[in-house]
Image 1 (cartoon, rainbow, N blue to C red):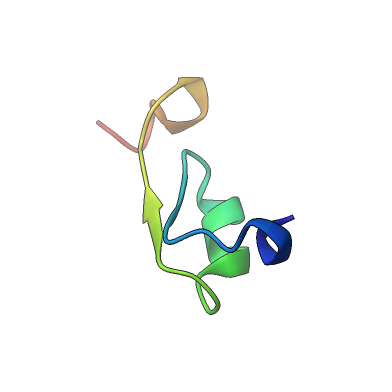
Image 2 (cartoon, one colour):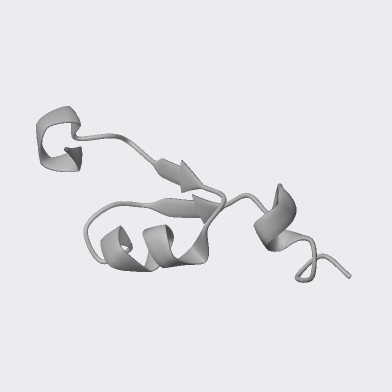
Amino acid sequence: MLKVFRPHIFIDDQVGHIEGVSGYYPTAHVPFGALNSSAST
C-alpha cells in the first residue's frame, strides 16, 4: 500500500509496523493506546 501512496512520512503507534518500512520511508512512532501503555512508564 505504501508503494502506491508514496507518503512523505509514515506514522504509526506500533513499533513493528514502523520497523518494516523504516528503510524505505521516513517514519515516526507515536506511543499511544493500550499496546504502548507499558512503554510510556
